[in-house]
Image 1 (cartoon, rainbow, N blue to C red):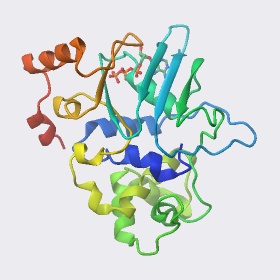
Image 2 (cartoon, rainbow, N blue to C red; image 1 turned 90 degrees about the horizontal axis):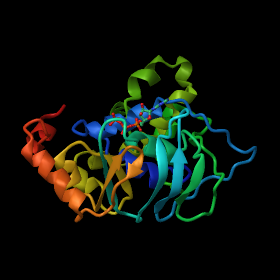
Image 3 (cartoon, rainbow, N blue to C red; image 1 turned 90 degrees about the vertical axis):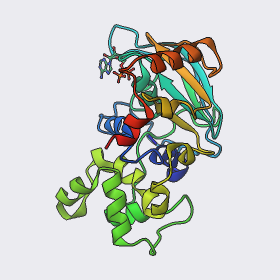
Length: 265
Ligand code: ATP
């Protein structure tokens, strides 16, 4: 997710969506289970995220012969929230997969805070230390926080859905597939009180991309992007498509509601 080399600047963006009520985060976490298929250069530069601006510049990608994303361009200004909506299979998750560099783009480029490090490392920084140390490791530059209790560490690991797996690791070792989850567990370990506020509060001043299925997720977004057939239909929440989308949700009984969201486990 999430670029983890000011780990919390970036993963803070994504972690802050971890709450039981947010199915969108569950979806994101599923992405972390996916194998990373990109190869780093021998000595890749770490990605430095300062402001958090995300730009997709004419990005195309396909898993196989069928084009999945076709010449996608959009910009997420630093600190803003974008909701990705669209039919199943339209390419929403693929956009996030590319952002996390689970795959490399086949055309175009993805810029994070400008074109500084096009070949930055794709892996998650974890330290050669205990998982507790890694989870308790603080915001970039602040180092290990001895004040973070074991209770906070376990709660954070639980929220990031990595606790049970950690308990199964031999001698606290960390297989590669769980590294990202350990990294995202850093945030709640540092700020357990932040796990409670609403999605709207959590995304304030943080660059956030959300795959949104529910009205209450969408309404607070600064931009709505409809993904359809591997293309972005628009990026303006005030546009016709936005109105159509809102009407569609409001009109259909099958459409999700705030009540459904708040009831969701
Ligand atoms: P949903 O809302 O159902 O999760 P989505 O909009 O997130 O859908 P993607 O998961 O990005 O859509 O999939 C876009 C297209 O790419 C779909 O046609 C899907 O079948 C295909 N696809 C996704 N992952 C793979 C993969 N690993 N290999 C081959 N094709 C894939």
